[in-house]
View 1 (spheres, each protein chain N blue to C red):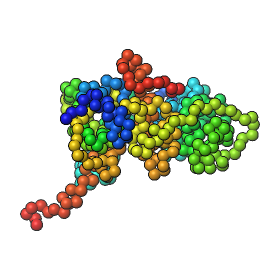
View 2 (cartoon, rainbow over the protein chains, first blue to last red):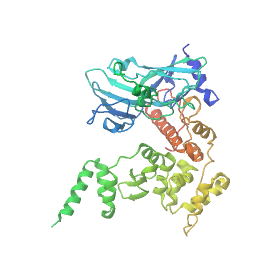
View 3 (cartoon, helix red, strand yellow):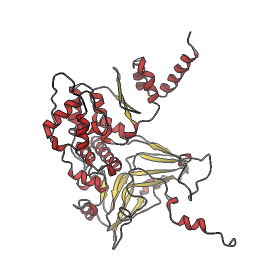
View 4 (cartoon, rainbow over the protein chains, first blue to last red):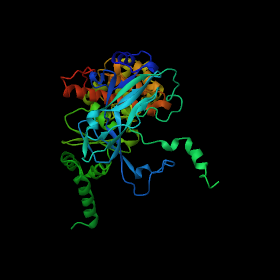
Length: 204
Length: 258
């Protein structure tokens, strides 16, 4: 069930912190509209760059990320350029807490999509998530496009969840509480331990 | 005739200052020659967003402030600008960075009053958090206790100020506002979310957010600093948004001294 505007506003006023839907700062009341909450592009970015040393190995990314990424800050009122085929990690201006009985989908605004800008691939926000949302920004068009922090780039559509267990706070979730963009934590996955040990079929 | 050493230093200075915006370059050029090279060296490193933002919050006077990272607090001032170096290790902490106001005030009670007018009781916390005790530290302590009582002060802050010597001269009197109502923001910081007002609005009371941060337990302190800064930043942005788009309906309200 999608949560409508009146219920969203009630959730945002919930007196009990764990039950509260938090989206802050809200620069405009219009951001809560219909059955969604618009989120804005934040000011911190991780720029991906061509590596001089080697490819990214998702099994071992714990060191040396400065070889293929750098952080940048672009204030509201400034702009940055996103080139064709360039991937940049951005972040929502808003800090978000999704209460345990809700989850959300991040949906890019079609107005940006028509310029070639893809906003998010990790589209689900789990119950209990708390932090700013990292956005994967990619320019799929052939023309460079400017990004302006403070613009509305995506919307969150919230759904009711029955019987969820804590996915984040207090349970060691990987993405709890960031206020800036975060690089992939794929190398933290437990699956790598098994994958490292498995010999290819035919070599056993 | 110049030695090669002198030429090398001259070229080095020109290379660094050549990349600076013209007003900054002119302000650096107007610094006393004995300190100019040290400030030029500091200008090579980028200022952290939190340090820059908090300087904006506490800034007084008519001259621009130029913040630079360093190993400790330092200040140089000329007719064009105020240069303030902050300890880079504390640069992501909004309360520690509020001490930039105390560095600017130095021994001038009029300036100190301006800082107090902006961040209230947080002026005292900023001294301990930023580890800066200027010539007015003893007066700041005495006046704070006179206004709010010593019960409001935690042990580390009390101990910090007990070590500060009194400077002889006329007593200074400062006007303080009400003690910040920080309980809600404290609860939010300890819980682990960005301080906010009902509905998601940014906190209107920045001194209360800073006071809440001061009382957060040490094991949560560094994470809480990031959350508190996000709240301060959100409030400043909300005010700017409100000024820039007055026709738009806006959920944020209230205008403060910033």
